[in-house]
Image 1 (tube, rainbow, N blue to C red):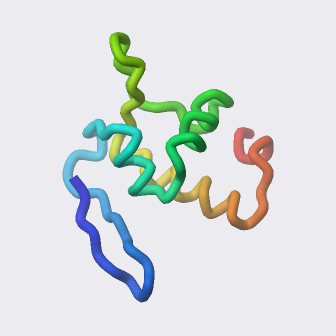
Image 2 (image 1 turned 90 degrees about the horizontal axis):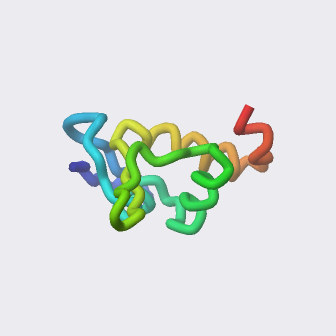
Length: 88
């Protein structure tokens, strides 16, 4: 569950409740302003693995507590930091 609020011209998604609660990749993408494709790639390279993967469907699930990490990664990428540097 998240609480949305507008800050200036930006929508801020603040996680509410249990930081270990699992959310699907689409909701996680919306919360972090990262595309699903980018999240798949970050998983492939080991930068931001999902908390769980459904063995039957392959769907990725992230913990609410991972939102902050994803947002930091996005901000560092916006500043031009290379992925290789972020993985170390």
